[in-house]
Structures are given as structure tokens and as C-alpha cells.
Image 1 (cartoon, rainbow, N blue to C red):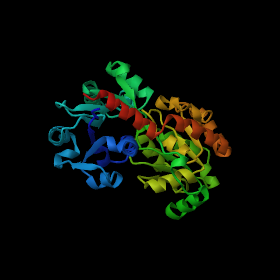
Image 2 (tube, rainbow, N blue to C red):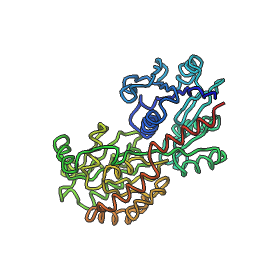
Image 3 (cartoon, rainbow, N blue to C red):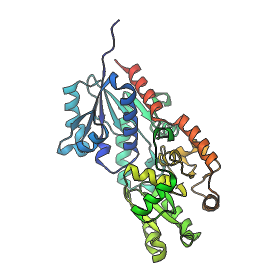
Image 4 (tube, rainbow, N blue to C red):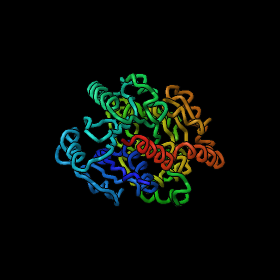
Length: 378
């Protein structure tokens, strides 16, 4: 019997050339599991400018370097079409934006969200309009259309007039306790005290932009006077968009309060795990997400979680009753204070881990994605 030849797959890894965000987590998690499960069934090539960063994560993969124009849209017109012709790829996988159709190569587009369209007031005009045009064009032209949540699929279908049956959900995953041997909480706290100078803290991990709603958490933290109890507030994530109200409020805080609030642009994976393990509470106040990975990472590391129930996080019912409406400040204040005074216990956390891991694992997503390619081969 004739066996199928290996799938030749190209992945646009431009997300590794930029600040850390959800698209990078998706590519790293999905293809780590893809290579572990199906490495002998396909030849994998990544395209990126920062070859060293990609090869450090995928040491056994082929890395195709982008030229000087490859850091931006130029890669779609020069580098990627040339590589597709040279290597005769069966599929080319893109995050949000794709190249024009190429003969013999099926494009796969994962459109993570269209939050910029649903919440226009949170994004600059040019940012919105360029993405609306380019994202819509890319997903409409893709041979295989995917997104990361049922929520995003519904919004893409509704806003871009695409049959929802054409959009396949390949969800994000997270690493779970059985996959790692993290530091015990006591050791993690000691590590954080030595490295950052705090060990009693509330944690929020997210890029800084208006929809992420950092201001709600910061205002409530200061209103409740938690700094007087020696509790620090730690934000991890780079600024993606200006948030004047947040910057103004943070800048107006008295010196004593400012020294208890920490803004960290980026940390290593090892330090991030320790932060999750050491925090007394992880809070995710976002008003709009196409998926929302940090709450899953946090619960996977054993952190007590207080999570928004908006947008894609409405699917995270395993956090109930420790969820809140991010538009309802009194509700958030009440649940935040209760979670500080009486955080979710070990049995609750283990049950949430069990339910979340059953739905969101990179191995499950890799299986869905690989089967989708297999059934789409021409």
C-alpha cells in the first residue's frame, strides 16, 4: 500500500520577532506538541528574522531567515513567496495576516480575535482600520480558516460574514502540573524575594493596553489600602498601546503606594512560573479577549485565580464563583476583597485544573490541527 509522503509545512514565526504576546504562546505551544506527537509525519520550517530566538525554542526545526524587509509586511511579498516556490510547501500557516495565494500551497490563517472591531474605543483609528482590512482579507482568502475560541469564531463569522462552519477552533492550551516540576510555593516566594524584592503580592500578567483593564485592579488595590497590609501589586507585561488614564492614576499615587506597585516588562519562563506559584492571588481583569491564556497558566501553576467573565473568558466556568463582570466595579471590589481574605483553596484549585486541562491542552490542539491538515491535503 502506498504511504502518504510527509507534509511540508511552513510557519510564519514573525511573532517571535516582537514583544511577547498570545500569538507567540500559540505558535510555541502548538508546534512543540506537534513535533512531539507527529514529528516524523511532516517537515517543519519556520520563517523569522530573529533566527536565534526561534532555534532556541525549536532546535530540531528548519529556520528560514527573513531579509531586511522581512520584519514587516515585506515578508509576504518577497521572502515567503520565494521560500514557498523553493521548498514546495503543502501548507503555510499564518497568524492573523497571510500572503497572497500561491500555486500548490494551501494557506492556513489563525485569526485570534477581532477585538479591535468589537471595542473600537480602545484602539487608535489607524490601528483599527488597517487590521480590519488586512485581517478580513486574510481570513477570507485562506484555504483553511481557524481561530482559538468559540467566542472568536462567532465574532469573526458575524463581523466578516463568513460561514461559522468554515472556521475551525484550535484552542490555546497551557502546561499542567503533570508536565512540570515547579518550585514549591515556599521556594518560589523565596526566589521572588531575592530577585524582585517582594514575596507577598497580587499578580496580573498581561500586555498593557486599554481593554486589559489594569486601571480597575490598580484603583481597587489602592482604595482597599492593601499596601498598608504589606501586600504588593505586580504587573507583568509590556505596553502595547497608550493608556493615559492608567498612566495618570499611577503617576499620581503617593510615594508609599508607588513603591508597592511593580511594573515588569518581561520575565523568563522560569520566573513567570515562580511568580504564578508564589502569588497570593492572580487577577485577570480584562474586558475583552479572543482567548485569555494567563488565567489558565496561573491555575496550572496552582495559583488562586480571580478572573473576568467577559468575551472568551465566559467559557471559563471552572473558575466560578471566582469570576466577575469587569464593567461592574462594586462587584469586582467585593469579590477581590473576599478572594484576598479567603482565597480559593487547594481542593478548588485542583478541581479547576482538572476541568481546564480536559478542555485546553496543547496535545489536544495539536491533534485537531494535524488531522485538519491531513484531511485537507490535495
